Image (cartoon, rainbow, N blue to C red; front, side, top):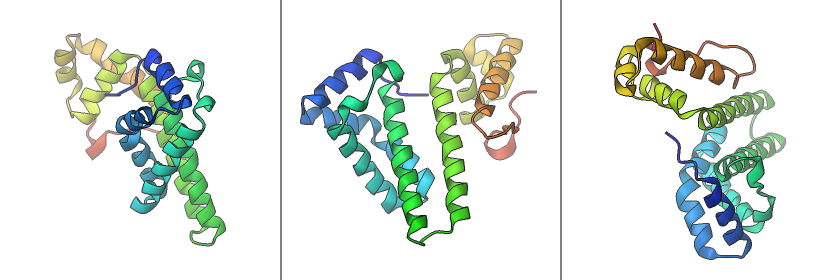
Length: 188
């Protein structure tokens, strides 16, 4: 479900960027461009703006590779955080320029922040929980089908889904019910 790079890859990539290795920037872009563009598009709702933020994020990573600290998290998380900050900054500049009303901007920022937190939570949760959520929400399997795919009991599949959803619920400002795409209940 995620494409997190191993910590050793993260450190090596940072070193290569810091030494000005152009191939490293290309590799970083190939690995994370869709993530960056997706985060920016989710915040801005604008393809052109998302393209500009994507360029800005990779330029920033190239020029400021020393800002990344592998002890603070994965390179993927750092890049996603840069994308979110650059997109929110762009959105707020549009508000300051009068292009967008303040309430619309703040609502977009809140929604994007919750989505960024949810992405971080999912990528940080243990693999068994991620796998259960992936089967239930993205592959649209019920908990019995998920249990069969995972090779666990029905009770264990329900437990994993419940724990995964509890973790995800912390991404929002307040407790909210999480419903799967299409409104189909996955935990019964």
